[in-house]
Every structure is written in structure tokens, then in C-alpha cells.
Length: 209
Image (cartoon, rainbow, N blue to C red; front, side):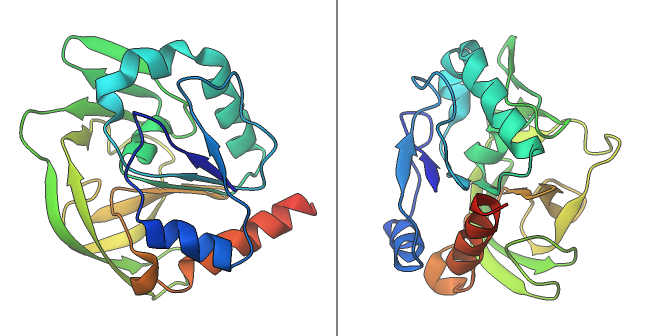
């Protein structure tokens, strides 16, 4: 399982990474600022951070962005939180510039000076996905200055109903497409005990496809 980790993506609970390893994963750290393309992995985990602060470098690495998009659209299991969700969008508008991202989801993100989501979250899983069962309740937290600029874009599907928090707005969180799930909520493995094993199982299915 690839872990997107560098100066732009730094927020990972150590217990989440340990839970993946305990479920049988070998973790491979990857920098979207430096890697020329996505290496051969069976799944991808993009954690939180502030990609807006390094948006020029992320956008300039076009070959890596393209490899992530192609892998996601080919069925690679991808789980993304907050900053990772931004990277999977089409574009990020920050200050007076616009930066292309990986483009798995046809969404654009804006940035405001005040937090657009800050605090604990409660989500209900309302749509099928590889990582959480329909009806499952998730508790986590969010902290982001970005927001979804085009929440009514055609073809968007969301896995979660927000009972507490902001998410993507309109009571929705958890953008999904094929085996890709991207949420503003950060979860902790000890509070979502099936998450790590579900991601590893999805990786195993992909590796033997």
C-alpha cells in the first residue's frame, strides 16, 4: 500500500499505519512532489496536510498526477482524507492562482482565510463503497480551509451523510468513484476497526485481478 507522504501531506495517525501493517500491508512511502510516477502498488492512502501551501510543486509534477488519475480510473483502491481529497480533485484555487490536481473527481476547491470545517464529525454510511458498510457510523474530525466550489457538478456520488460537521457541504461527505473514496473527515483506526482490514482486502483483490 502506497502512503503519500511528504511536506504537503504530513498528517497520519501512527496507529492507522500500524493497523494497516497488522492487517498484512507493506507500506511504501511516496512523494507526489518528487516521484516521477506512481510505483507499482495495490492500494493508495492519501492522508491530510495542506497541499495548498505547495500547490505549485504538486501541479508541476504532471507525470505523477497523470499516473495517479490513470491508476484510480483503472480500479486501484484509493482512500483519501482532507488534503488527500483535494489532490484527487480537478483544480485547486489558491489566492490568485489555479493549480491542476490529479483529476479523478471533476471538482474544484477554493480556499478561504477562515476554517471551513473545524471540529468533530459524525458520518453515516449511506452508499456502497469498498471500505465501510452501509449503515455504519463513523466518528472523526475535520480541519480545513478549503471548500468545494462546484458541489452540484454532474455525476458526483457521496458515500456519507453528515450528522455532525461540514464535509463537502449540503450534509454530504465521502466522494466516491469506483474504488476511490475521498473524505474531509480524518478517522482513527481504533475508532474504525474495520477500516484497515477493508483497505488491505481491497488491495489484495486488486493485486490478484
